[in-house]
Image (cartoon, rainbow, N blue to C red; front, side, top):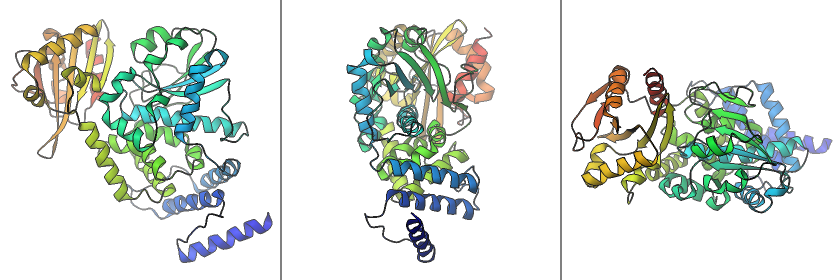
Length: 463
């Protein structure tokens, strides 16, 4: 053992003088992980740019993490893929539900955007590694047959095709959607009163969606046990552990930071680094908009762990994900309304907010007027909504632009416009559908649904 560490010291000294060297396959994974942490620590010490990667821990904490990760890597020379973990867990859910004592479901919010999906999958995988490590078992050993952890996508499975950016990210990570759990898969669990269900909320902090609210959470064997989110704190589930709610560009950043040791233990290559960072890049426009220090920190952290994940690769990957997010070719109007949708109860009113990636003018140009009106009415009736809100975000001549529209209740829509026009800088303009619903240019482009929904809630609940 002594000779081994002497060899390591001499090798590290050689690297410090002569830079990068080839690591032959015979070198152990713990050595590579140790060098990864050395690169991270060096970035922290040398960084003077406030926008650069700065870890929110001191050097001694890094060394502690490094040693723990080293121990974990020694125990797990063959790290399972995310897909293999999901596949085994999903099969146990389908075939052995009656024999399980506990299920941990990690649910994203009801819009089921990229951040929710990546956060849910990452939390599930990394939480499994943490439990295995705490139990002093290898992460490659068989899953605990009495306790499984699964990400829950808070939509019916048939709606996944509307989220082409998610399909692209999953394909690049070699994750099969059949290994994931959807709302349409929950019937056996709803019928089972024996298995204990731990519900972890990511990318939201109050349970969302009719099925979860009415058929899952009210069951006595279901408890919300964890929250990691970056939206406004709604003050629920105060005993959850973890209960991390803080401002951040992407919830994925908070998840990866929470499981920092486990991320290192995966020894992520390019494939995992792309997957882990995909939502962060998408939500912050490649770290250029609505970005917080922790978003930058986590992406740079992943780059240090996966040297092939260079700035050029990051930029190219972001462009591809962004292109797929904006792709709505072949969608119906109903598809567009369901693509990125959230539903709320504000006092006595039920409000649905759809985020669109194209302006209202695009809808009017590509769809018949009667189809647009009929689709909005159908959507409102099927979801029992008092009002439909459309939030359009897009680039016009290189300038980021937003629109806000109210449909279905003229009186409520007018009242909301009057109450929010100053905060959101709303200016009315005419469109082909102005006789059906009012559309406003939103001058405050920083206010996304994350900010607008609480504003609507605070006002509508006073009515």
